Image 1 (cartoon, rainbow, N blue to C red):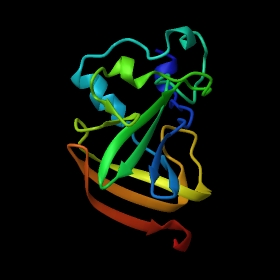
Image 2 (image 1 turned 180 degrees about the vertical axis):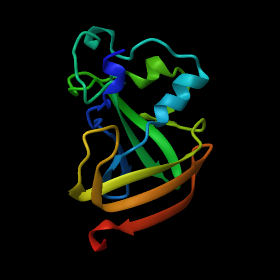
Image 3 (image 1 turned 30 degrees about the vertical axis):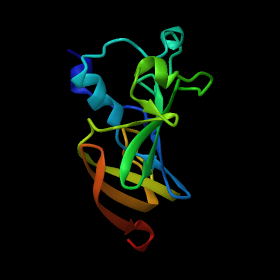
Image 4 (image 1 turned 60 degrees about the vertical axis):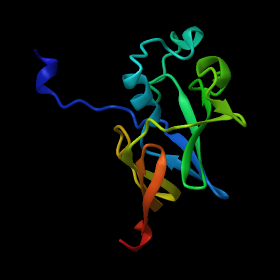
Length: 153
């Protein structure tokens, strides 16, 4: 009851990565969580890493994504310190082609960033960077994109 009266703060989370063309962006969204919910996935991807406490990576993994021909693909899943990665073929049998899996389950609007850090808040995905993109995905297809130059504001 005593702690309920104090505001709670969480560590800024380590973002997933999104590769588009030559750019690698910080993805402030967790597309793999939709897959986990849809498939009732409860197990950690890295059981040996469960005891590693990392407040910047509560989900226990960092996923790498790539947009190719306006389609979103999962290319890797690493543990939080990037010392281990999953075998996508074992995790998603029969769905991996050319070392990536098409994320046809994912529909959402996501934000991705690059450039200089402009604003930092010690919580969730609250940081604001110089360059910001908003991508809209419907069943794994990128259907819209907006760019914002945050250095101007």
